[in-house]
Amino acid sequence: MVLSSSAFENNGIIPSEYTCDGSNVSPPLTITNVPKNTQSFALIVDDPDAPRGTVTHWTVWNIPIQKSQFTKGEKIDFPQGITVFGTTGYGGPCPPSGTHRYFFKLYSLDSMLELDNGSTKENLLQAMNGHILEQATLIGKYSR
Image (cartoon, rainbow, N blue to C red; front, top):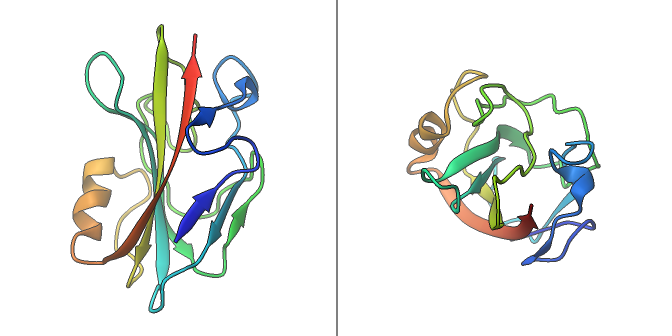
């Protein structure tokens, strides 16, 4: 499985448009080479370089397998979790200083998840336990 973006290459620089310094909209994403038996996807975006430990910028789950692309700033109609900003939905990169890496982690799952909108990343990881078929990661970098 591959997760890619037309906005930045893997290990490339995330354009400011997708950050708190720009429009703070989600980047376009494309999913290819989906594993057999996939029933849904989940997406976690986090920053492991934050000063106080990994912070969550976006979680989405119960993405149907027919959804192979997300457009720039697309309104998401699937359950989303709480971010480091205390809200649901996408919260773009906004590092205090220096270069941070942002991991866009896509999970292929063998089922839909019984998990409420507004759940935490930890709740999502627990719900996915035993249901992950494959994972793909896209890394973007951003500096302030």
